[in-house]
Amino acid sequence: MVQTLNRDKESEDYTGDDEFQPSCQTDEVYRQNENSLVDDVCKPRVYLNFPKPNLKNIITPVKRVQELLTKEFERQIGSKYFKKDLGDQLLTEFKKKNDKYISLLAKEFEMKKAAKVFAKRKISSTGDLDINKLASYKFDDNIFRKVMMMPKGKSHGLVLLLDYSGSMFENLPGSIEQVLILASFCRKVNIPFTVYNFGYSGITHATDLGYEKENNISLPESFEKKLGNVWFENVSIREYLNSTMRTSDYNNALKNLLLLKKAWESYKSYSSLYNDRVYVPDFENLTNTPLTQAMYVMGYIVPEFKKQNNLDLVNLVVVHDGDADMTNREVALDDPFSNNKDRPYGKYLDYDSIYVLTDKKNRYSSTYITGGEKSMYQVVCDWFKQTTNSKIVGFYLVPPTTRYVRDAVARQYVSSKTSSYGHTARYLNDDELQIVKQFRKDKLLISKKPGYDDFYLILGGKDLTVQNEDIEVTGKVTSAKLKSAFLKMNKGKQVNRVLVSKFIEKIAA
Image 1 (cartoon, helix red, strand yellow):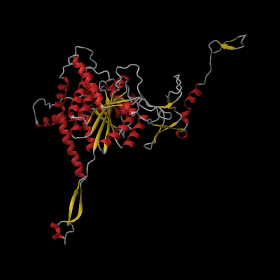
Image 2 (image 1 turned 90 degrees about the horizontal axis):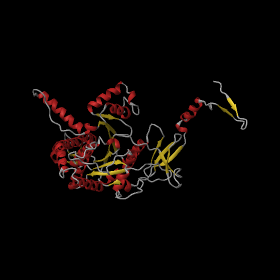
Image 3 (image 1 turned 90 degrees about the vertical axis):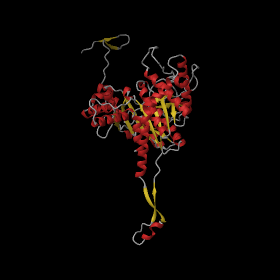
Image 4 (image 1 turned 30 degrees about the vertical axis):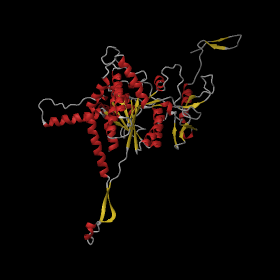
């Protein structure tokens, strides 16, 4: 194309009719990607500290949470949204549906634990003579008394962390029921436990701190904002249940949580004429997924829980339906968006450095590369396991539709044979498609996802809700049909109560 140039006599400048600006696409692409040619070893190292958490501003104790729930549901009863005895009715139904199976699981657990101890028994000689065997000393040197040494089993505890992100609203009814079954089992066999949820809602946090009637409140920060620290966004962790509650308080908490479960079940129904309609309290807001921050705070909660209950091992069970929010910033000063130049802000970590995250108190350090294979969440999980000597068990809830199941297998499934972790559902191979089919059938899939000791994908929604199991036999009743129906019913019970069944396998095997 020939370009016509006009000469401006006054300015002596040349301008093109189409203002053509030449560029070299090859050079631009090279400049954009030249940092990838630098080996990671040659990148400069930047040392950052984990921030100090302000636990009083993060954790809401069970007494406060249950006090708020009781007050809210009493208000709803006064407004005649539901009957006064609805909580008692829901508690009776829950116990009728689950108590027998929980008792059977408790017996199974005690038998497995006793068998494990018996298998490790050891018979030793005491060094004391057995008077009854002295007569055989000439032909038998086994004349000393024996003693059987029975090893003491390790004491276990449970800390459960429930995701309260926005995408969980369809899974919350089933999740709450699963959590209550697991808590009831632990209470039955005297395993210390505590149940938390995590998220961050300004309304919830203000209510927990007693600011519900105040306006323009500046809520306290969850983590120390100090130069040289990793920048963590705020998180709120609320305690729902624990094993130290009195029976009356525990039963009242069960009623509140069952009413909350019913509230989430009717969340989509907007009719005020809905029978026994329970409304979700304003302070039970669903928010984002600050899983990295919550896991970091667990690193302070679990050691204290372990110490208070004199435990050997603690299992942290995380129930969630999404990955952690991205956390890849450091604290910097001189906020460019504020007139207050001393106000800290989060500066994004660049791609040109290797960041060394350190915890001097616990003598821990780990490298982190922006956009690398190891996420910030995996670094925090590694820090948690090393500093607390505890294990992380993850339950990832998957909507039961084919699209979400395929996507979950693509992004969350990792095994020794097949690892499609981080891919998209569009590129599933034949083996992975077979895994999708099996997952939909079994409603459970075991993954070796980094950061976890055990990681399970389970179908959410209605599949997570515990159903009443009955033996069903069609046609003529035969012993073979009864056996098949019984095995099917028993398997259904284990799938329906997946959290407690997998927890028992973990601590009793």
